[in-house]
Length: 85
Image (tube, rainbow, N blue to C red; front, side):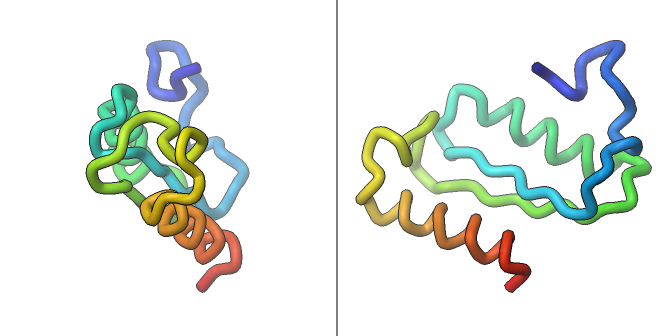
């Protein structure tokens, strides 16, 4: 699924008010995450988008090593986003 692919629905039609885009610095899909974040900030969507990148980490690192410090930092960032802090 790629919301920025040709023919995809316009991003301005998203019904949420806030969005968090996360990726790992070394994630093979990181470029897609960065492109999605850029598309959201450039779109006519009226919400706010936040970016969270885990330095030095790859794809789904938090599943492979959930107790590592970077996974804990990612979870803290997600929790802070959800709680609005």
